[in-house]
Image (cartoon, rainbow, N blue to C red; front, side, top):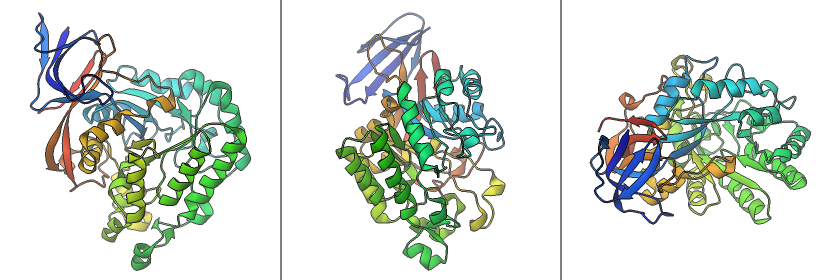
Length: 418
């Protein structure tokens, strides 16, 4: 079938078509022509008011639930949500039951998701069952297609195991993910340690819980000359430590969640358990530093940190609520509300190279990996906009800027209603 995108404004600062209004002809999932007013036989026309397109968006941290926690989210519905939220590629976290820690478990995910419009890339667990004791089958998972390794949201207490892991994966150019949080320093903490936690009388999690482990891992990284990625940093001090490490030539990258770019610990005055996150929301100073770090390139990625949680684990008293918020559906609209369109698209399309995932390009002869959207529509995000099975969303009642129309990924097309 011939597919034509009509009057699409291309947003790609590295393309000769940047901010140009063009028609795009796609045949069998391949971009065949980019021109004005294309006409061919048997075409299916995709046309939206104020249609903008970019390279397909990439989210480096998504959790669902299946296998084991299907009540939170299934692979089928989670990937449908990803597609309708504009993402052509996601990295799926291993926090399932059983944990994704073997060749067979990685292969199982790929087999289950092979036909999805959104392409899944699997993060394998770093240790067996993510227990932090014994290294998992990293090479076998690499052969099965795992793009990196980390025990999701679990800090590795064994320093020697971190050293061994950073050494070992160099045999196949592997990447280790670290989630720095000292369990003894953060124990029983429910939010950022600061003036707000003091006012609320809630036990806080100090910055040093993050920075102490981050410092340790950077020293081990320097010793091993490996590659490490910190998916979620939350404070200015961590950012400055990573800046220094990069300046010194260490192979380190880092990311930040959309929630940490939007909210601060002030949000906890509401006692809304959807603002209970890990790492915790920190101060306004930290939030502004993280925004600047993303803009100047010190922070390499921004992710949704999408974490479905059953309603019975959220609608409880704050101290007993499980951490996490879903963010896929609101990701673009929130990011676009604080940055320019050009920057927003840049952040949503970068980072694949860190995980050796093929980049997409809107060029003739290339596979179509395209996100379609309107950048100007503003609306209040409500529960009715949530597509996920779980509804634990910190962004409800937030003002969003921009609406996703859908994606084209090879021969797969997913469209939202206008």
